[in-house]
Length: 120
Image 1 (cartoon, rainbow, N blue to C red):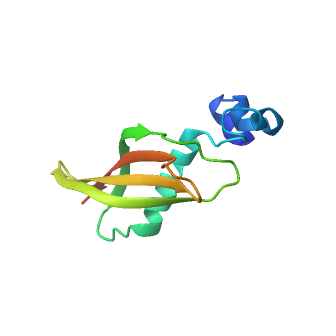
Image 2 (cartoon, rainbow, N blue to C red; image 1 turned 30 degrees about the vertical axis):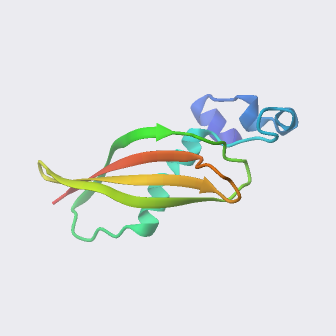
């Protein structure tokens, strides 16, 4: 958490001060939402195999929300679905729905749509 806080300049105590966070709104430190979102790339590669693209480009993200906190030290998993695929100049664009959940949590910790472009 501290390295991500340093990289982003987000040093809120809910992320980096375990003692203060005990009496905070979540009862413990929680991960930065964008840290959770940054795991999308790694998790997408675990479930996707694109063998005939000459290049894959991260084109962006749609509709990002952080409905619940991700406790520091918790286990996270992602459910991924293909929302759409369309032709674009030079290749294809795919939109993937990504829902991050933490073990034992009720609500998702992050919901987003990742947009990738594949060159031919």
